[in-house]
Image (tube, rainbow, N blue to C red; front, side):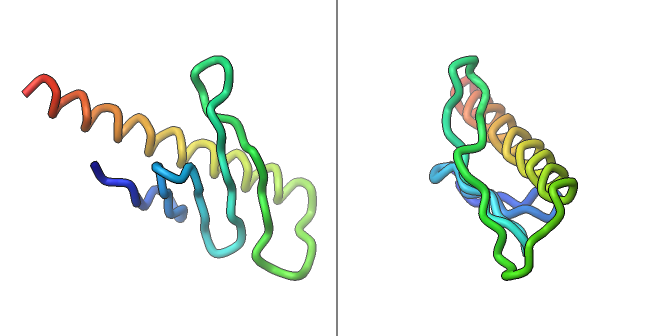
Amino acid sequence: MQTNLQILDWTIDASAKIVENDDYVVSFYDGEDGDYDIAYMRAKQVQRMTPALERAAMRDARVAFNLAMRQQRASAFSRFVA
């Protein structure tokens, strides 16, 4: 099973539930509703980003991670069915 994926400008390590790009590292955990929630987010740069940029990065990271997990599930399902 592939664990490292590239979606948008994010690199996703699905097995570790970590997503990162040039600016941020975001870690996820399994939420109660079967979705993934952000455990923490760390900026890689010393200077502080604005709250709006941080929210946008969180949203983008969540989208990339959810796409990666769907892709993995679809890949696993197709191997199971085949």
